Structures are given as C-alpha cells and as structure tokens.
Image (cartoon, rainbow, N blue to C red):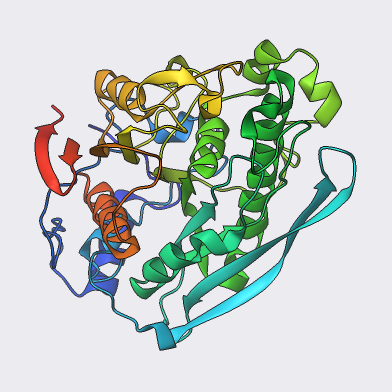
Length: 377
C-alpha cells in the first residue's frame, strides 16, 4: 500500500527519523508500553486520507516518530504540577435568539515539554446542546496532557427554542438541526483558530484529533460526515439562515486524524459515512443508553425528533468499509458510563499509538474485556 509524502522524499523521511530517534535506518513500530496491545488503526485502508473533504492540510508524515516515542501512550510522563493552562477567545457569533456570544477555550499542555509540534486534541463537551461547559472535558484533557499531548476544551453556542436543561424534548426538528449546525460552525472555527496558532502553541496542525462527549460526539461526527447539502436536506434554507457550515473556509489548514467519542454517540444517518470520509473512531456507550440510542432511535431519545443512529450501526458501517475502530460498550441501562477518566484516556492513547504505528484492527470491548479483535486485511 502506497502512501504519499508531500513535503519530504522517502529518503529524507528516513534520515529525519534516524536523526531524531537515534534508531536504525529501518524503522519498525514498537509495542505499546505499559498496557495490553488490543488497539489497531489503519489510516489508509479505504482511501488516501488526503482526499477526505474535511481535511485542508496535506500529510507531513510524522506517524513513525510518534509511534516510536515513549510519549502519547498509557505512560503519564508528566505530573499534574508540570501542566499549565492558557485561556482565550476563539470565536464570536450570535446565539439562537440573536444575542452576541463570545466563545472561549482552555488549552492545557506540559510547560517543561521541549517537543515541538505535538499532536493536539480538541474536546467538545456534553449537554444536549442546552447546558454544560468546557470544564466538563478538562479532566480528560489533563490526563492527555500528562501523556504529552496538547489539548483544549471549548465552549460552543448552546440553546434552542423550546428546549431547556429540564426538558430537552421541548423543541422541534428545525430547532435541533440548527443547534447542531451552530455547534459544528463553532468547532470548525476552533480548528482554524488553533491551526493558525500552531507555532505559538507548539502543536502540529496535521495531527489534530477530535474528541467529544454526548452532544460533543454528535457535533464532531456531524463536522466529519455532514456537508451543507446534508443539512439542507434536513432543513432547507439553513445555510442562508445561519451562514456557511465552515464560517472560515480559507482559514488556517489542518488535518483531522481520528474521532474519540465518549458517553454515547449519534449521527443522523450512518450512510453519511463513506469510503471517502471515514475516520478511525473510538466509541464508549451503554447498550441501554436512554439519551443517545445505541442502535437506532430518535435524536436525544425525544419521540418527535429526527431519527438518530448510535455506536453500533456506525461501527458496523466502519467494519464494512474496513476502517479501524474500537467499540467499548457496557450492557447496562442509562446514559452515564462507569469508566474512569484515566481509563478512557488510556484507551484513547493506545488507539492513537496504534494509528501511528499503522496497525489495522477492529476492536470490540465489553466493559473491560476484549471480545473481538479482527485484523483488517
């Protein structure tokens, strides 16, 4: 299988790796330190990743260096005392009733880390598009920063007519489609913002990872798999009403490597996921999720909302497309999971290490036990 290297020749790439890793000229992936090797990711089994529409930056191949590093896996190479946070504003827009909203972020990284161009995780919080803050994701962001990643959690526009924290089902399909659309717009704006500050923040815009919980998982999935035409099919005139889905299409370029979801998953149609846009994905969901259906149901499990599909049909779609994934499910009722944040981020980190090592697996874990591990051939 051939992979394109846009800015360096293959010979230059090997020299670069030898210079920075101190290893032999033939680079082979190492096993994941400190944990069970059950996670494998394939980055090009379906199509050349550069052709995916969502990505605006060609590949600069640093995967082998990340795979060989003792960073980014299950080992916490930094203490919490080594970490520092930066806060700021990444976007300004109008909310669902036209009020101007200033959207902020919290960025966390290890201040003593001298590594340049670190992989970056952008985190989108839960809350049914009605409540919640970036603080909901900072626990997981902290664990990732201890592993050597840079991470940021964002606030995005919340609220829709008829909906409240006490009654998410009080709106209608027009309102919930617009709520998702606004959240996607904000996440696009955040991607461009952090890509534009890559030098200042010492992150690699070609190694951006989207992570989302519950409504955040819906948001990042819609960003990856829905286009303006898809939203128009659900709600004609939405682009004219709310503006372009990507509010800054000529903004700083980036490349999304993977999707990391937690506390449920949702997409309006699994058929949005195709060979041209499918991304390696981690899922965490209960089979009896009463908010986001694990199989198929309605959006937010509200009886009068649009249909929605969960982790099971979407992982089945990735299976058919021969794209790597890890499905973590609990055969229990309820929306909230019982995994610790440390465990979740260890699974995320193993997933990314296998991605960078070029492994090709589809993993299913029931609670904490691997029940299926299929190598993609």
